[in-house]
Image (cartoon, rainbow, N blue to C red; front, side, top):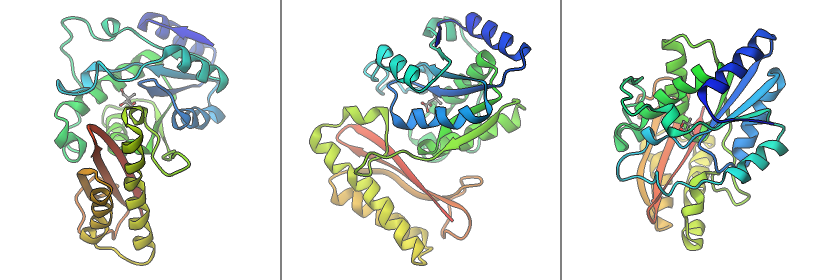
Length: 279
Ligand code: PAF
């Protein structure tokens, strides 16, 4: 497995692969890999000759009060996971290589990135969209794979690819859950064992809403209340629970078209995401 530490090295390798007619798959990550990330590697594998995992804790998507400094990092462990998963190369650039001291060019998506996490984390999606555009320019992938847990991110990045004509096919992998239902996230390590237990209220609430939907319930108010109530009963603090169109993230009063029930909630100081595609 190759470990590429600079954009120049990465681009040289990618151009050589492309000249040799090899298809490149990219799984962008911020490291501290879990089974959910590795499932994305498997999704890239079937029609890609080379699979690259990028590991870069992107400073520009963290707000000033957020967890950039303490975001979990363990490169050796990540490299071992990638080797085991048959990854061909890790791209792990230095922050100074990705962002020059006088960096001043940003890529912004101005519609889908407004609600939900965009409203709570100003500047977050500007950082995500910019870094993903940079990763595409460094890795030159044919396919890039993202996880559904960040459902809004997936829609925003689909819009980036469409609007700026990146010749990349996006693939979305399903949410991976721990055996007890908690959606896998690198941030789960922040939870104390008590918070970890109480945080199960999120997936429990999502399951209750899914069951209500399956039984014919379509009201956004009712479906969101199911999740909201479960989270507060578990001692969590909902940041948002919203029913939105899976097409354009319009807020929906009823799940009468393909919808996403999008959830963010705090347990202690840790903010966790979950969601469910309804319909
Ligand atoms: O989903 C993530 O881990 C990050 O937002 C991404 C896409 C790797 C960009 O930094």
